[in-house]
Image (cartoon, rainbow, N blue to C red; front, side, top):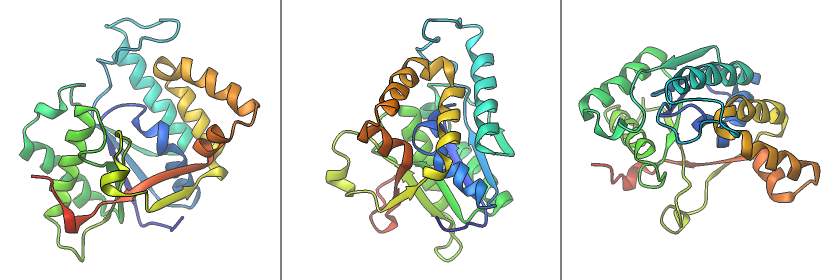
Length: 227
């Protein structure tokens, strides 16, 4: 992986970073690159309350905040920003407010790389709204000064429209951090991690690929369809 000046990660929920980006984040940190993670909400409206349940609607925001802080610590993130928006309402935030928030981060940090969701191909309304805000913000920056934008996509049949990922990061050197970040989000991933760890013991090929490689799409500014 190329050494960056600064990496800015923008996702709406605690654990969005863990599934497919935590290995990349930890590898950048190992390479000496500063990483800032701007998490827009605390995921307080999540359906999962632990498995078996150990959280309540009232306690979940506090639990998820601690889980996010623990995951950031495991990945080596020194600069975690909790942006204070409300879960499942990001799509209703004022567009100008969202763009300004992203631009303020970019202007402060001067990142060479921004990571977020690919708008149109990330399923959840909060994911989509976050990706759109990042694209709208970076679009205002002249081409020669604009940071690279690497996007996560996982909607059904997305490759039919945007092709296969053009970036595949080998994050095998950060496997422990990736597993640790996943486990840190216990309220959301407890059931999943039991299953994945069993598969890892059996050296299941698909699970090993998930652990060792992370996939991104470079945002196609020539075919920018975000309004």
